[in-house]
Image 1: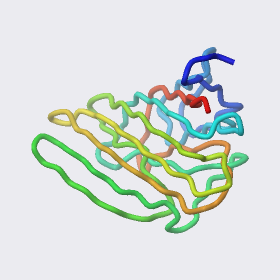
Image 2: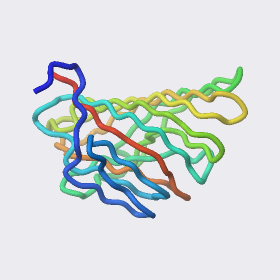
Image 3: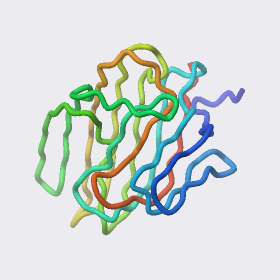
Image 4: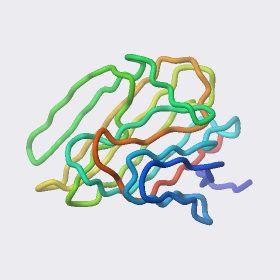
Length: 181
């Protein structure tokens, strides 16, 4: 095993709805025009915490790129089980919000400029509630910054997650890293 702090992980499989999605030789996933992208088998007993890095371009603006935790290819969509606290900044405007629903928001998305997201999953494979945090940057008129924190109140072990859109599609690349214990 590598002595580095982060280990690039290869999904056991990828499910998608859209044009294409493929696992590269190094383990990252390249996808094109997908409305749904599920990475299976990325969470395991080998790591407690994970970092996800994505670059993406959407065909929609302002809807948010959503996710649900999954196990064995099935999403957990329990009503009001994902609670998100949001903080967003655009130009000199700052806004905040809080909501609970059957999904979480992975990042914002923009139909004119690429976005970059770094997300952290805390304990998704452990049979306990999972926490998630993402920081993302995208370009509207100026740089736009989002910082989202999510808790999922189900004490379930998950092996993957499903990224999906409310409308439109997303293209880009995503990679999952395990954090050494």
